[in-house]
Structures are given as C-alpha cells and as structure tokens.
Image (cartoon, rainbow, N blue to C red; front, side, top):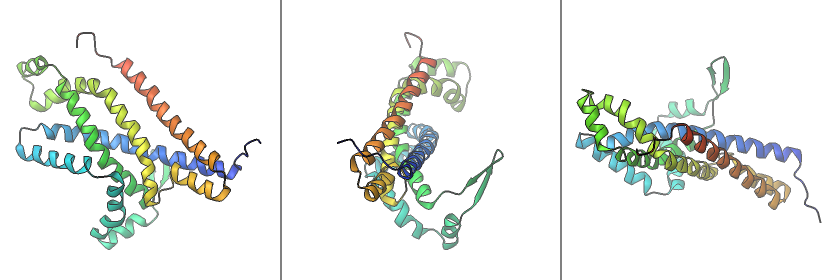
Length: 241
C-alpha cells in the first residue's frame, strides 16, 4: 500500500517550521559565539572577580537542563519585568533594516532565542577557551616582546589562532544548537518539531510528518557540516602549528 502524501497546506506548515528553526538557530549561533568570546576571556582574566563570575555562569548554565531554563525565561522571568516592558515586548512592531521591513518576533521566539543563546554560550566559551590554551606559549612571548597591550595581543595574535584550533568543536556546538532548538516547542514556539506534531495531529499521517521533520534537521546539520569543512580548509593552520 503506497504511503499517502501530505496535503500542500501541511507542507507549508512544515516549511514555516523549518524556517523558524533555522532562524532561531542562526541567531543563537551568532549571539552565543560573540558572548562566548567574552566569557572565554573572562574565565582567564587577570581580575579574580571576572574569573569567578564567569566560572559561576558556566557552572549554572552547563549544569541545569535547557528545558528548565527555557521555562524560566518564558514563564518566570516576565514576572520580574515591569508591566510596560512586557506590554511593549508583546506588541507588534515594525523594524526597518537596510530598506527591508521586518515584523517584530513573538515573545516565544524572543524567549527561546534568549534562553538557547545563554545556554549555548557556556559551551561555546569552553571550546574557545580550549582553543586559546592550544596557542603555543611562544606566541604570547613574541606578542609581548613586540610591545602589544594585553587586549591587542588577544585581538591580533591569540584569538585568531585560538579560533582556528576551536573550529571543529565549535561547529559541533552549532549542530547541538540546531538540535536543541527543538526544545523551544515546550514554550509554544512553532518551530519544526512543533509543526510536525501539529501536522500529525491534523492529518494522522505520523510517519510522513515526523519523517519530513527528520529530513529537515538532517538538512540543516548537513549545511553546517559543509560550511565547517569549507571554513576549515580556508583557515587551516600550517603544518607544525
């Protein structure tokens, strides 16, 4: 007996869910990478206060379940904000960017992206920190002998090399971000896992709905894998480094 195909409207639902997953994942990847650099530097800062603060952040976010964190940011954190702030966040806005008009995202999208970013930052920072520690000691000494300040040393000498060392584990974390984005359905975000359940409930075509969702995730991971291989070839360290 041939498998029944999903109706076009259900395919549109799935496509919208895939785009939502991609949007959340891309934003979380970019933001967690930027924040991860800052956290990695704070972990090895000269001031003990920064080191302890960064260590505490890492312990909290690495050792609590992501779903619980998402529940906190969606259900509990809004109670700490002024009523006017929540009203503003939930009111539709229009954002003008480079000639394009963008709609204001839902609170589910904001909370999901924020929670996923904070969680991923703790892991991304550790990979960047490992990359920093992989830079040969002679590079530090050469940079110091050149009269560079600590910030100039990190920016121009250490971090570029550390990023090369950390590329493989970083892309592994980016793939985890894509997969972990499925947990945002717990706060009502209509991403790929959420829409696949909607399609299954409406059509009773379980295999088709979840099969397409699986292919969607595989496709996103495959894109990251291809990008990782391309970037690693472009910035490959010379032999001996």
